[in-house]
Image (cartoon, rainbow, N blue to C red):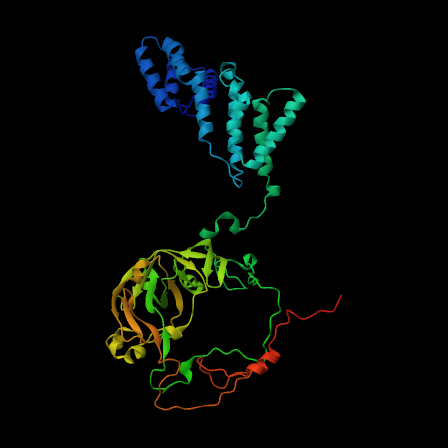
Length: 486
């Protein structure tokens, strides 16, 4: 014997089961009342107990006339049963593509409704399930491909049987057949873990074998071609005999024990760590660029911290044009000055590997000591850290990093210094024109071969002397060449 749970849709079956057991036991009215009080639900038990007390002088009449009549009115009314079934259908969740086991739960609920419909007492109040009005609300809880299958099945039934709509039992049998088919162990296929979550929730570490980027796997690598130049179709002149050499003047200019000169930009040595995790602090160089509207970071930065990042698409505009880019976006990081006196929260960092990576533009204490107006700040500028890379470019979205707290200027041709919130920086050409002054001037012959290593790294500031007449003989455009071919 099962306990009655006070649900109207289960009342009829429970009542029939209880009365059959009482007949087999040949129980008297007092015994039946005791068993009824034991197996009723919390609310129904209270009503039966109060009616039993009211009819204590005639328990047979109280059982047959009062208690069962009250239970029939309260839990067996057609409206109560219909409302309870409708509520259970409304609470049933929408089935997703990989939740085929829920089809059995839906099939059992529909089978229960179909069973209640067969009772003449409830047939009329549940008749709307035989029309599209009652079925369509259930169909919307199925995945889309199952909805189309039901449309095909119902259309064929209407044509073959010449009816307005298939009966509810047909729909219940259709759902049961789907449950059996979709949960057949013979057709269970192993699913990979990557198909069960979004990319942003993936904890697996992937790395592209072609570009080394950790934001996508090798299969998702996209080869980006350089945009074609718009020209008039003339051929490009190829100068294979003239090697192109990019070198730095600090290798051969001036005394080895003194400052050799450089061009300095707003590049600061800072500390960086996730918010609330100062123990993960790392050193890096950051470029302060007020010409960029967003802050950027290299792939090395994203690979350093094991955080979960979103992947976004964006357009990168520079002097060379516009290009579509894809990269990760990080939030919740703290930028800290090298002396650890200032901490600024970073809004967001977008992955980009086109950040200028030239440590030759980083100011050092030697630069400040070469100028009388900058000597006082030499102690506040750290030495060049060869272990720290340039991995950040701070744009205007972090405006607090651009605040100028103090400034020191010299003559028109001399560099100047600014104290930002993250530290002191020197801006300008820390070089006397194109030729550095030196106590000793040495002229060394340097040979540069096209396909071999250079003997001595030359200065990027140099003069190239050439004969104009000889150049005119070898350098010409063939755009006006006469073509005699037909």
